[in-house]
Length: 162
Image (cartoon, rainbow, N blue to C red; front, top):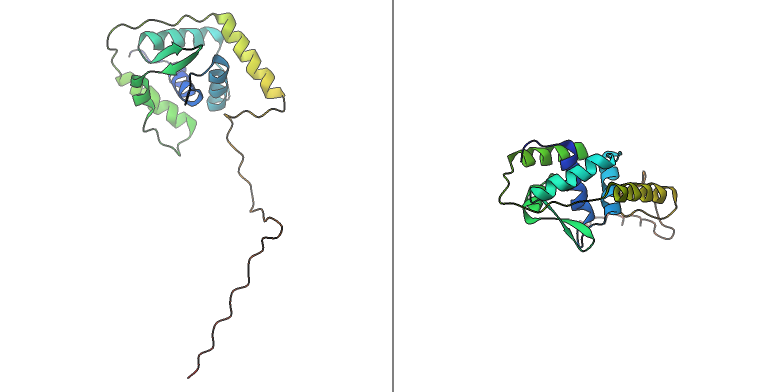
């Protein structure tokens, strides 16, 4: 697939995050993109990327949402788990550059107004106190001991009898 844009790799990884068990809605994909890059690409770039990836056979519209095709799932599998997001995006972009389009696929047309609504809904959800399930859990800084769970004293060493 040539040329490969940064938005393409971001969209593939965001779709993979948001559509684990069911097709990811546009708001969920936008939330995942924001989580990955701390920035949401503008509407025009997202609309172009959806259409470009659908024509390449990597994303398909299904049931009011979007899913990765098996070819795109192969691109995403085997990513380093402990790698930072920029490294993951670079790996996906590298794999996309090696990908060859097989056959013709239907494009996905998304209204830019729908993308704008999804971005605004995501930004409104950030301001509420509701939990965003795509945000990783914060790790505690120090060990927290629960009350009533103290460590036992070690057993004294047995004295040897000679």
